[in-house]
Image 1 (tube, rainbow over the protein chains, first blue to last red):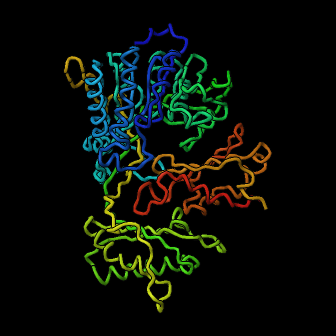
Image 2: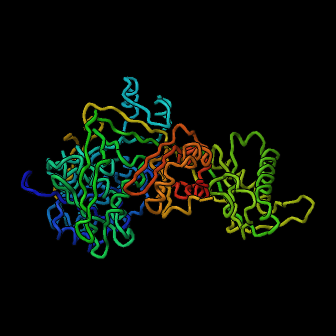
Image 3: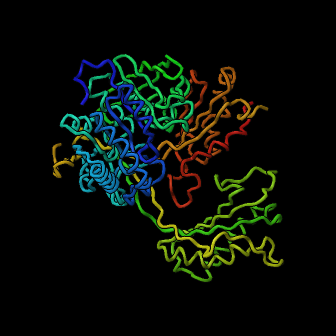
Length: 470
Length: 102
């Protein structure tokens, strides 16, 4: 463990990578430990890649990639006796992703003959508990969503609450070598140990925010994976873990903009980080010193994330180089879409139910779906993505198969020979699965940071697993 | 006529959670920042019209130290819906590049 409070000038957080599974570099971890790391901390997830991971309880990164990163980090943890904290395990931080990560950690322990004491902190939520919270008026909507309802809660496959640092600190005080957390704010995982040792919360949280994507706050984010944060009593410093990489005032201060709708304040469990008065100073060619952040304590809330599993989709892709079509793409799109709906009506009829078809013209306006400014030059080719959405996979595929001949033979003008466009695959239709969506953008008031959280302990050496603690 | 693309060193967009998009307009130098960051052409109405959203929900932040105007707005549809076109919203900024500032 780290030295006692008061004996440390800085608390040094080794952030090995922006997200577990992306690729930890062993030489960077060695460098960070040589530079005096007191803890290794990283998150393992995000909502950015969509709701499927929470709805299905599956990870985004491959098991072998996560295992490889854990091998490096767990070996370093054991060799140097510093704790390892991983937040938002398994991408979404639900029970499925957390237990998947736990099992990999146990496997790595056995293979490397390590005997860590592991705290596994759950933050997936029981719907009945949330409905009681809702009935008490303890759940509040964040813009742009409307108020919570039982139906909205029930529409979710899984719901997680974002933890703050307290459960991590508690686990460390109870002797954890490794803490694997469910959904947690990225910042909280990195801020936990500096906060535990009494560093100013504004600086600890701000350092957490700057380091949360690893080397993203450096000059060359592809030139390294991680950073070292040194959090002191009146400033923190950030330095890349790759000696060839650098942090500059601009790269560090600009990271406060990244993926953050408000660049001056960040709402976290139990308070708001304010950085409007922060100053960034280059102290050597690779290191930036940051001062000035403050922390406004607020009543403790946790943000909820919930994901639903909706209708099913089947897709087809066809390529078009026909110059006449390319010169009239908007008209072609509208005519083909109308013809496809007509085809579904005539072949499937009302059994198709509340289905949806979209045609997205890659090379023209697929990314916006909005009209292209008049006078735009015709592209050299387009890829047409056909997406049928229906209540069942079978119906989505039935619709796709019915539309198949129209998708690759549809003429711009009806009185001409039928063209044939370029399918890329056979069979042409691909069953894509369900549509997963986030349903919640709400916060829940809690009595304390542990109310909606539970911890299980695993002593790998003794083979003992216990529930409870907090 | 000056277009946004002509006075910026970088313009980028990204999702900020599943319900919001944030755009960082990084002006090329202090002079361009001062000339254009308060331009009506980059106001809430311009974003509402470019992205089909409610102007009242558009948030703007001027960051003078970085010569950046940051604009955040709710997604027209939540991430990952039936007609998702840009999961991470990383391409949405392109629609702004030809905005005429004066």
